[in-house]
Image (cartoon, rainbow, N blue to C red; front, side, top):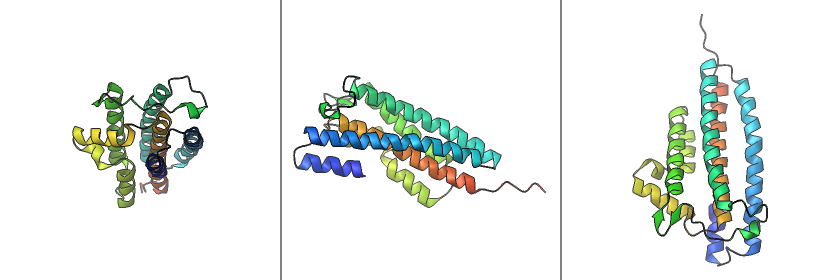
Length: 199
């Protein structure tokens, strides 16, 4: 949400490609990546504490799914940065064309949509029946991703078309963080489940 607000403000005042703004996005991106790294260690600790074996197996399976999703988005981020920017994010002012080019969804764009759609489905499938958690999933991975291809493409255009590269990279890092948050909430629920009484 914070990322979306920042992008909207920068576009409104017409300075979203200025060096200072790009560097700010770079700083936000780095902090989100640090948070994601810490989150992985915390989740491993949570999984280790789960006593109910059936939930532990489910938690490990979900961890693998989220790691795969994280890796897919990391590949897209590397393509966006193209390996020649390093940590000088003030240079990342080119318009994002990885997902949408010449008014058409690219192969990378279609791949990203598929990853988002699948991650949403994985969360809905593995999450406990909890309305608050489902609302969180719908907030981070909206229903548009589960609807028609046309709506998924509209979602992609809205979030990535026409933005500078660093804004798109930061958005992808934010989505990685969203996935970590949802996974952690699911793991916390699993941790609260007692071992079944077999007597």
